[in-house]
Image (cartoon, rainbow, N blue to C red):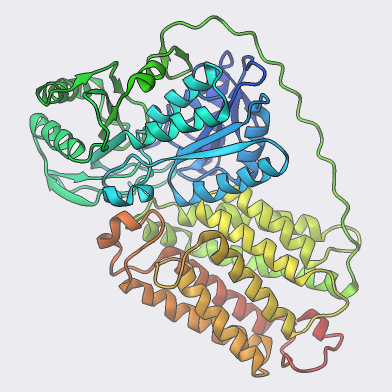
Length: 590
């Protein structure tokens, strides 16, 4: 159990601050993560890695010459926000372009993808290589759906060495893609990990059993097996990985035995010895292996085996020197300290003065966000437990962090002299939600709230028709960004019925409040209905059997929020006039 902390909500940030304090010769703190504190040659490709905290040495521990230029660091097991990735990459850019590389998880894909679009729009050439090494998370013919676990290290190491050698962005990217394709991993767990402040692990393994195919975010394995001997475990891991080898595999491999937090070095060494004998018996030559804690999961009791099938070029870069806080190989000449520009004060952008109707609706938007916060706080633990069944258990805390930040930002915006329009209030709130929550839900909720604000704008008056357009904008932002469809067992399964019910009621002339009530009922029924679905998206997909019989946490949280907003609207002074009525002064507050 993680025991050393003050406030669990601050654990990730404070741990990162302490890591920087202990490693100032390697890294410097920037908003969103860390960058090298030593010089990066002008024109060199900047490899920017990252993901959620809780995996040290990944990801910040791999920043240094010969490896990564920077790491974007999210909250515990949650993706860094798009803004964090963008700022870290900007600080790392040395003029040769940026290669983003990270594990294939939905939240990371969304946030890093948004940052890549922004960097490219500013003229910083940016590419992405996803790590997809975990053979348990999808079959070989769907390799692009696999998640990244300890294979992160092989991709990062070879890409970082290629950048250090002066290769251009195209060549570094291609080497990273080839390394990823030639990397395979499989992990096992003997017990789950515990998030700071939690009173129990995210999952448990029955006594005498082992969980096969775990993830690094506290996800349980896909199947349970009787606890094997060390020789049996070595045979299981090697056999399954060799059966999944790349089509152009040679006979030279890097073998990495990785401890996930609690299994310590003597045990790892014992297992590695047995694995090496099996690999040699299969006619393979083991090249510069690694054995230790390389990609952890807090205090998880478990380990993984990674194999990278080498070619001559990949072997050259795997063997190249590197010097980081957590990974060192060979010798590199000392580097001069880098002069990082001091963070300047942000220049406030001009904000359009709100109309009286918009200022009133901006204040009501704050009130609605407070209601969202209240319902999230009320159900935070329940949502986390639901998410832990087939995920990483962070949905409740992620939603809490996001909505807390959104309310604070919205209150500040609405407190300006003359108030603020719903466009400004909700855009500010959405950016704060995305930034603070991280993860998939952070990206989706942040984007959707911004889209809703932009749909409301800064008008002279508002009606039920504007409410319909706002709901549509909210839903469209989530479906277009997340790419989920009905039946995928995501928030979309509750979201689309909510929208359809709301629009049908509003179009029929029903009041906004009554339309919201009907839509909330539809969302709740649809969320309950996800219990019978198999997840086709997100971290729960590899654990579909565990998810059956339980509703999707994203759908449940949306339904709870929709119901609370509906109740708030019925009991507040917001308008309940039919959408086809002429707007009045009261109607401006619809």
